Amino acid sequence: MTSDPSKHLVWLVTGASSGLGLALVKCILARGDCVIATARTTYKFDGLFVNSDMGRIHIMALDVTASFKSIQQVIESAILHFGRVDVLVNNAGTTDQVGPGEEVGIDGFDRVTRTNFYGVVNCTNAILPHMRARKDGSIIFIGSRSAYATEQPVSLSAYGASKAAVHAYGETLAAEVRPMNIRVSIVIPGTFKTAFTSPEVVSPKFTDYQYFHDIVAHVIRKKNEDLRVSDPEKGMSVLVDVVRGEGRAARKEGWPLWLVLGEDALADLKKRAETFLRSLNSWGDLGQGLTVELPNL
Image (cartoon, rainbow, N blue to C red; front, side, top):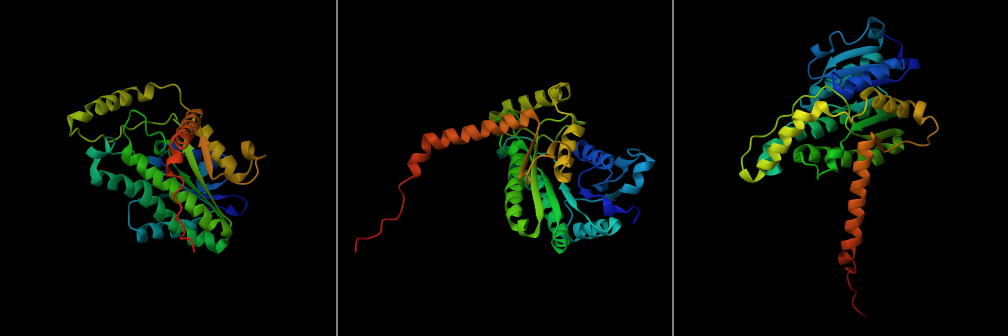
C-alpha cells in the first residue's frame, strides 16, 4: 500500500490511458483522491503523471475482453493495493465495426459487444462482492447517445446496440443494489475534444449502402476540425463533483441515474424523447382495449 486512502476516495477506471478515461484520472488526482488506472497495455501511461501523483495512482493492465476469472484476479489485486475500491468507472470501449448492421454481421456485433457490454458486466460482477461486503460503493457506466441518436448519418448499429445494453443493465443494476447502499450512474457524453482514432469501418459489401460509406469517410476526415466540442477535463470534473457531492453537485439532492454531459448530448436526448412521445401520441391508441374479456356468469 503506497498511500493512505482513508481520507480519500479510491477509484478504479478502465480504459484510462486516453480520451475521457485519462481526463478522468487527471481530475481524480487533482482532487486528492487515489486511482487505479487500467488499460489493455500500460506503456501508454509512460510520462503522463508527475512524481507527486505517483503515491496516489496505481497502473495495472486489464483486458476487459479476458475471461471473468482473469478480470476477477486483476480486480482483487487492485483492491489489495489501496485496501478498497470506492468507485468503479466502466469506461473501456471500442467504436470498431462502423457500418450498416447487415454488413457488420453477427461476428462484428459480437466483437463490439464483448468489449462494450460483456466486459462491463464482468468488471462490475468482479467488484460487487467487495462493495456488497462494505455496504457502500459507486458504479459508473460510460454510456453513449448513440443508443438513442440512431438517425445520425454515421451507421453505428453495433456500437449503439452495445451501449443500449449497457444502459438497460445499468438501470436494472441500480434497482438491484440500491438496498446495499451501492449507487449506479449512467453517463451520456456529448462530443469531447479527445485524440481521435479512426474506427474500423467494415468493407462495403452491398452497393445499396455505398452512401453510408461515403458519409463515414467524410465524417472521419472532418472529425478533428469540429470546433463544437466539449472539454474532456471539464466534463470529467463534473462527474467527480457528482461522486464526491461537491462543486456543481454540492446543492443537488440524491444521486443521478443519468448524467448527461454536453449541450449536444442533451439536445439529442431531448429530441429522442420528443420522437418517442410523438409516436405514442400518434399510435398509442391502437394498442389499447386489449384486456381479456371475462365470460358473463
